[in-house]
Image (cartoon, rainbow, N blue to C red):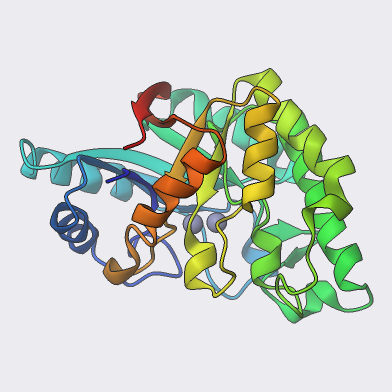
Length: 268
Ligand SMILES: [Zn+2]
Ligand SMILES: [Zn+2]
């Protein structure tokens, strides 16, 4: 079983799940290790009704205590899902060097002052324009910022577009997606395979297989896997299927992070 490296708890503004419930779910699935990655979208308060600011001084000790409690049964690591935004770059650059976490997912949730989850983001633009702008913003952010280990859910935007992924073809955006992949590889950053696409009825992970294969063919080796679970029943979504899917995309190993350093694990 793959290890889940994208897990939310009640420390995230959009989850009610106590951390221990996620640990129990992972142990029941036979996972050797997991990493918690609660939301920290600093500076997003004017764009959403939900507070996505993480209470870091409360969060880190809570996960550390669970790690000790479950020692010998399942290995628990501490991460965060950090919202990338250029306007907050001073804060992000100051925060991360001394943050005592094992792993940082860098994600784009907010673009041009909107939560891309909200309809307002799509007003006045075609779906294609909305998707293109999302990829452009992601490229700008990962080019300017180094404060993350893996790029979260690269094509997250297709979860929330008017037609979701019905008309989505990665080829239409390759002029931006390929530079995103090349930038990750050049910087030694990982790409995330986020299996929440299955839960959202897309029939694919984020990003889609075509993009995962391209990343591998360009020389990308660092690949993390996460379910983006907000509830225990979502933990490890489609992981058995995803192991085969990743092998078909050319991967023999996936990556976990301990103290911000990547380690390769064979996909079985
Ligand atoms: Zn996310
Ligand atoms: Zn997430």
